[in-house]
Image (cartoon, rainbow, N blue to C red; front, side, top):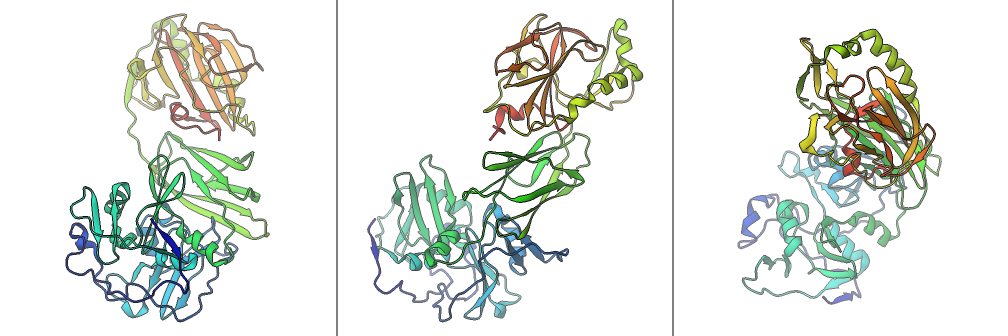
Length: 508
């Protein structure tokens, strides 16, 4: 695709907003019906506030939100629109304050420009996506040679409105994400911006495809600020290990604060609900974990992170975290009479007190890297005899009020057990009455793994172990009805599903 520099800026003739007859029929129902001009000829100087602002010192009303990641406010009517579109997940965080231009109210976001026409109050589309893609091309002084209609090419649609087409993975993304509303018509063909990056410009934004083929909405707002030479907000991105703001009971939330400019916050502290977070600095990242207790009330909890940026501004990142109820199964377990002592409440309380110090161990660095492996050869789903957090009743008790702390895998007596990840042995005891032969490993960052009911223990306290190193052997000691491995992981003292660490590398 030929890309040429313009001598006098982009052409700014207006288009009618309503798509003409023959426009992409598959999405014609999503074409807005209001009459605002398709592309605004600007006659006023744009000077929005783009530098980060400090967090408010008082509680904000519900119609104003402060995005601490970028240090900007979102107010109505943009706030409701932003939230309805998935918030920062799709449009990104705000990178400017609201500003007025040509009778419209506008605001830049990382991946969008929103505009509001006060004269359209009550209309169905009073807040819409502005023409960020066109503004970006103008700022970069780029132009693209018009394309031609190639007829009935497979998975390709040509738009005579802009003389460009979409196809392949870009078209798939456009179709699935309300293309006309989110992106508008294409104003370029796809082209290689770098050897590993394919991009395509649209009226309202830009799509990009990395070498792996994944298509995403580009941070065109950031690119526009850079192209104009405006001051950019001092960002502190928040990374969570969940796709949205929902997490099930029994899982662990990973909170990661980093920045491409390699600055880290000062005076960092945070909470989720009433729980104080324990942050550790790992290279150029601050990390904390929030384990969601299986017994916690399923509701929305506010995560608040407070810090100061390099300019000395107080900043706050606020994010609602919704804990979703998980229906843990029930299990009744009958113990042989010679192990009835293990059900004695005083015996269990005394043993819990003996190992309670393990819940307070916090090594402020990861002692492992990468995904965890399984701790025994047969630790697979087919051999699970008790699930994580399964609600258990013993013998004929009517109360299923004991949440199983780990996962039980059926194993043969004497089967070797292996460390699933590197760490330091912080506890061994061959003779606990309830847990039986026990080993505990500190993996750092408040993460401790446990192995119960062992018949033999090979490692010693304070020993450093590597992933795959033998810890001991499977047994039937303690409160156990047969040989098995009990594998348990606690984060800051709270039980969590061990399989999380097999699926996600939380050491980074």
